[in-house]
View (tube, rainbow, N blue to C red):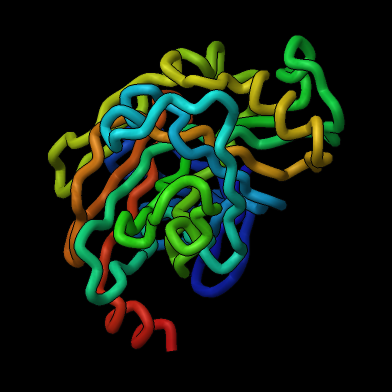
Length: 256
């Protein structure tokens, strides 16, 4: 079940995702809408924890060594965004890119969980586009707060898929298209730190609550994106998430 806005009213709906290029939304009383006729909302969540350099090919792409332990950062609520929404490219930056990622949604309170039991604490999965301005990254000795927390930089959704609907979260294709061109393609089998390892590591020092999310990182295949671009990120069997990139001026003029 999804929660969306239809004609400014928040409603619970279901979604027919048989055609990933054009989702169909159905209300509980039988009304049907195309995905462009509704206002999508990000899945409700608590803390969103991101992973940097969690694919070896992506680390090599950026000339970084493979990390010996997970490199974490936290996303702010103001960066939250949803399917079919606009994000902006800040003025006067040289390189901004997408990051298609599988997101793990925690299903029950997890504290000091061992890896062999960790999957029992997963409630479901969703998709994020971890938009990033590479200009803001100095080095990984400092948390990449500005890199990852610009307003609108956290497209998430379109929905949460139940854990039991995904046979193997460690064998899912991860892709990105920009204006219809495939730019990024990888597979979650290549995660450096897999889901149980991440849950064990994070829950060893902080308690994860239901609704908290772990964005597991992105494979290689980055490229610069600019205002006017349509960015679609996809995780196989989980969902396809669309973002429209606009200028900073356009984004804030519409927000006001």
